[in-house]
Image 1 (cartoon, protein in one colour):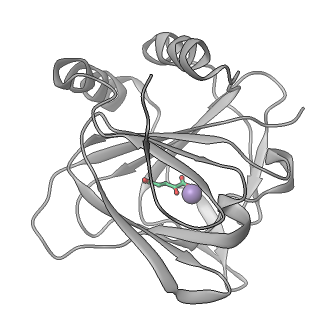
Image 2: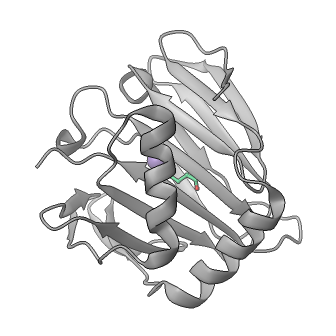
Image 3: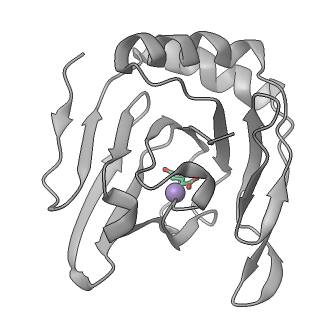
Length: 195
Ligand SMILES: O=C(O)CCC(=O)C(=O)O
Ligand SMILES: [Mn+2]
């Protein structure tokens, strides 16, 4: 598979703007909307427990409980719609992802704030494969020790973004709110929890 490298110093960042053909991406989005038990995750922000501004579901193999933003999530089992994707990722990248966080942004008011996916359970150099479905949203990186060092991407339906190496160590990322009238988007971040 041919990745397009993304030019951000001290990262291993690449993407595939059309990893899933549009028809497959449509079907997958429809199935996930219907089959996933979408939940509002309660997370800690600045010491307060709040509803996150999106819907989510943590899925994984037994033993892949995930703690982020101070809350622990037990994994839901893999739904049939996701099993072939996980196999395809293994075949194409050699990485045996054992979990995936699904986020559903119902409209432009849903978002995810600046963070990095650097939980200890992901190891020192987390490998994350991020699949986007639905409305195109802006995804931003900024360097921790130099906030002027930034990269902005528009993540289209069916695109796959690869974050590895020291990406999480040096950079934060976010999906900001938008005032544009915009439809639903689902994002899947495949991860490997060290069990
Ligand atoms: O929705 C996205 O593209 C990113 C989601 C994200 O950063 C996360 O789940 O940690
Ligand atoms: Mn993230």
